[in-house]
Amino acid sequence: MGNIVAIVGRPNVGKSTLFNRLMGEFKAIVDDFSGVTRDRHYGKAEWQDKEYTLIDTGGYVHNSTDIFEVAIRNQVKIAVEEADVILFIVDVQVGITDLDSAFANLLRRSKKPVLVVVNKCDTFEKENDSYEFYSMGFDKLFCISSGSGSGTGDLLDEIISLIPEEDLKITDAEEQLPKIAVVGRPNVGKSSFVNALLGEERNIVTDIAGTTRDTINSHYNFYGKEFLLVDTAGIRRKKKVNEDIEFYSVMRSLRALENCDIAILVLDAQLGLDQQDLNLVALAIKNGKGLVILVNKWDLMSKETNTARNFEMEIKEKLKPFDDVPIIFTSAIDKQRIHKAVEVTMQVYENRTRRITTSKLNEFIEKIMDAYPPPSNKGKFVKVKYVTQLPGRSPKFVFFCNLPQYVPDSYKRYLENKMREEYDFKGVPMTIYFRKK
Image (cartoon, rainbow, N blue to C red; front, side, top):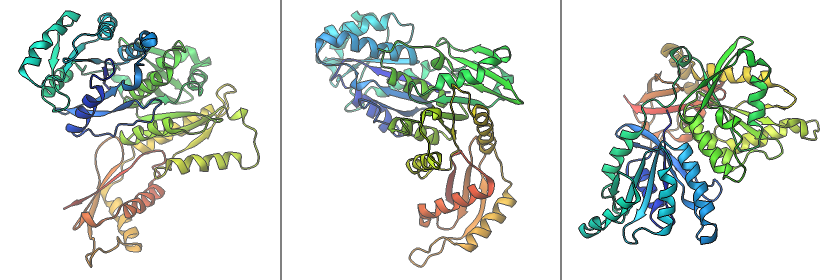
C-alpha cells in the first residue's frame, strides 16, 4: 500500500538535500518527477525492503514575510492531511526562528507522527545545541547532516517503524475485486464521471469507510461488472479553492495510484494531455498498473470528420513508447460512453492478469525470432534458450540467453510489440528482461 512521508520546514534548512539523500543514497527505485507546478518533487524511496512515497514540499513557502502565514498553512495543511509521517526540518546553526515556531504550532495540532530533524549537526558541539529544539514540544528529535548523510540511518529506521502495515482496510471478499482509481488534474470531470457511474445506482453502492483520512472505496456492482473504485473521497470532497488544489490532487492521485490495479486517467478534451498527466502516466507504468485514458467533455468540442482520430494520434504520440492504451471519448454530464469506459477498463484488468503457458510462449517467440533474429554484435550472435512469464500482478517476461548484454532496446521493443499483437496486452505496461541462463 502507498505510504506518504512529507518533508516540511521553512526555506533553506536543507529540505531538498535531505530529499535527494533519502532518494539517491538508498537507490530510490523511481525517478523524482518534477515539473509539477513550482517544481515540487515526489518519488518512491526504499529502506529495509519497505517502500514509501517521499514528498519534498520545497517550493512552497514564500520568502516575503507578509504572506508567509498563508503559505505555511497551505503547505502544512496538505502535508498533514495526506502524509502518514511528517519530517519537520530545522537548522541547528540558526536555532529556532519565528517561522519554525509557526510551523511547530500548526504541526502540534495534527494527530500525525512528527519527527523533528535537526539538520547541519556535523560536530559534537552542534549536537549539544540541538537540545533547544525540544522546547517546541515534540518527543522525537533526530540530529543529522543531510550533506554527509550522518544520522540518516536512525531517522529512516524510525520512519519505517511508523509506516502502517495496512493502509486501507479492505475486507477479504473485496480483496479479490479489481481496484480501479480515477486520477487526473483538478476540474477535468473526475467527480462527474464517478457520480455518473454511481449516481442512479445509489441503492447498490456501498461506501466502505477506510482510514482516518476517510478514504472511501465505493463498491460498484452493476450490469454484471463488479469492482472497487479506490479512494473516491478526494473526488467527492470539495476542497476550498485557495488551498493549493493542484498539489493536493497530485498527492491524492499518488495514493490512489499506488493502491489500484487499473488507473483511469481523465483528461479535459479542451486541455489535452499535459506534463502533469504524463507524470501520472509515468508513475502508473513504473508501478506496473493498467491504464485507460478518458477524454471527458467531448460534447463541448467542435467536431469534423477526423477530430477524434487526430486527437487520439496526438495523445499516443506523447505517450510513446507506451502507446498501446485505450482512449475513450466521453461526456460524464450526458453519460455518453460511460458504460463503454467500464467495459474497456475491465478488459484491461483481464489483460493485466493474463498468463501465457511457457510452451505456447516459446513456440511463438521462436517463430518471430526466426523471422527477425537479434542483430549480431562484433560477430557474436544472441541465442535464446527459452522464455517464461514471471509470477506477479503485471506481465513480466524473462528471456534466458547466452549474451544478454548484446540485446539492443530497439529489439526488446520489437519483441514487446509482437507479443502485444499476439496476446492483447492493451493498456498494460510490460517488462522484458534478458538474463544469462
